[in-house]
Length: 275
Length: 306
Image (cartoon, rainbow over all chains, first blue to last red; front, side, top):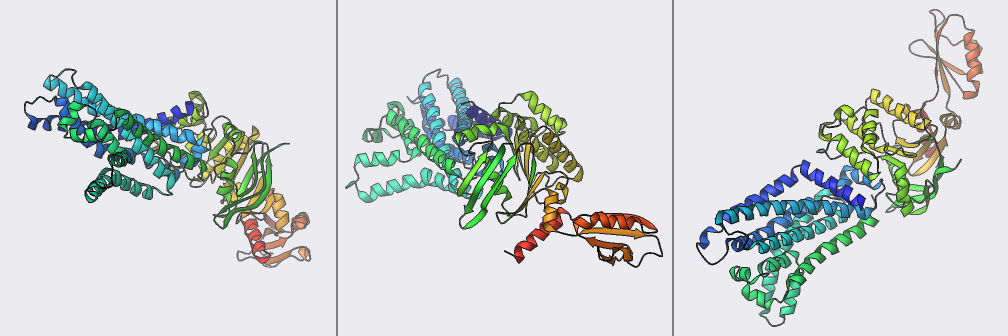
């Protein structure tokens, strides 16, 4: 356990020093604040809490941004250290290989959590002060942040898997971009195309549910947009929410599996890897 | 004497290429061993096998009495230091932060990290970013981390590459100090000439096999390379080889007028004795075959008789 913390601590320190943490937090805060103040303008005075509006727009932003950030942070984790020669050195210390990966994961997850909480939190606080809404809608907002951290964790784990699989950094980087494109852009279009082509003949609602769970980004979208009735109505997802009978527990479970599975496979492969 | 490192018929293949081929040897405590060979001879692979970073295709490796790949091997690493051939520490951390990280992994206190920085002469730069370090400073930081926890066994892969002569000297001074404390050092190098007086045993590797092993003297005897004498005589006597060396050593006159005598190692003393009797002798220079020459000669033998 202590080794995990030592390695996590070093990753966090490294992240703070090379400005990763600062850049990430600033980027997330900037986008969140922009969305909070510009995105709320067209709604005028409606019966929707400004925080609910922000949750919807932030959720869409998160789907694009957090997987990208998580992949960029993680694809380098093993293959980069292999390149620099520090991996052989680290493994010559009295640490187990799984501890190296798990420790790095803890560190990277902490960085993502910090950037999300501070970046989005700043926007949330600024908005509720400006709109004078007090604490209403905060639980939904906290839920969004929690889900965003899970999403970041899932893509960090996928990034490690890439990092363990390949032999050089450039390949890992290219694959990371490919994974991002696949899960964030291509997958939804493919599922949509499939649904249109199928015309509802063979694909049951259950099959579609499964398809959505097979992409962590979709699991995240359903979790944040259909989580509360108030938000799902506003997000135009109310109809979908009724069709997709996936409770928050299932969606959170899916995201956790998306963390656990790639991470375990990465750890298993790394244990056999020749350095 | 129990062996700290034992290798028994160890082979390591990458695809069809054997990086280490059926190697057997052992190192005892307090020795300084040099693995010598050109690039690709298997030095780095051998060190990685002993560290448990990679597993042998066949054969048995024992380090500090245990298999380096086992759980016991992992614990044994508390007593092992390693300096990789090329290591680039994170540029954004300071030297002390980096050393503290490695120190924590070996459960060593901060004071020891600072002591080591003093020992390698980096204390002045302890709070500077590694990105600002020179090549020599990085190499010394690498050495400092290898010395954490007073290891019983030290693996140094090409430790002096890129160091200037002064740093090399201080580097070997540190290694000599360790030997005095009973630390076994295994170092690999292709800078042969600097190793000569500093190691107990030399293992010459070629294409993953052990060409020859032993002390420098053993190697010299095995190679049977001639010892060269250069005699400088006062004007008038130069220009011809004195007759007293007839049948003892082959003589010739070098371009600068010095007389060169070449003889086998067992005739050295006799040549020296007779040379002293020469009238007008100014200087004698004795050139024992260098490690470079020995290495070249072993490789030559290898090609002639595979």
